[in-house]
Length: 199
Image (cartoon, rainbow, N blue to C red; front, top):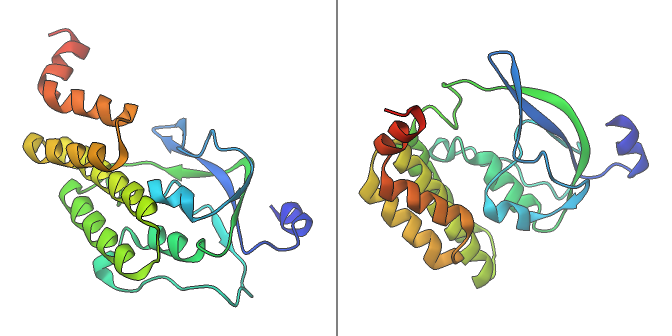
């Protein structure tokens, strides 16, 4: 990382790839297939694939700090990147240098209902505080609804999950991941488990 920072003449944001480790097994993260290079806020319209793997240049005079409102906790890093990468860029190095411990009490896994609430609050904050085009806003809303659909589905709220995935399709079109989730919601988790386990 130090070599790359020097080569790039001290970029404002730089990150390496990371993997999850759970029960001694390593799993790739969602940025595993990303190409090395510069990324801006457009990447974050589809959520935040980054974690604690980003370094920020200390002397960045244009830096917008984290939102310290506890209502936005869990989502504050997403807002941070969307704000800052509107006019700056993040460089991703194609090398895994971090392992993130994956467990059931992680903030992004422990409470589905809370994650839905926080996502709605974050979306409202973004709409009010970050200037985005109508097309960008649709893409952002599609992601937020898809994310909420996943977590209401995991909580067993099929009706609510169905509404969220419908909203995602209306905003973002017929993307394969939306269709797959829609199928899972319609079939139901119990039947899927029976199929998987052959009972």
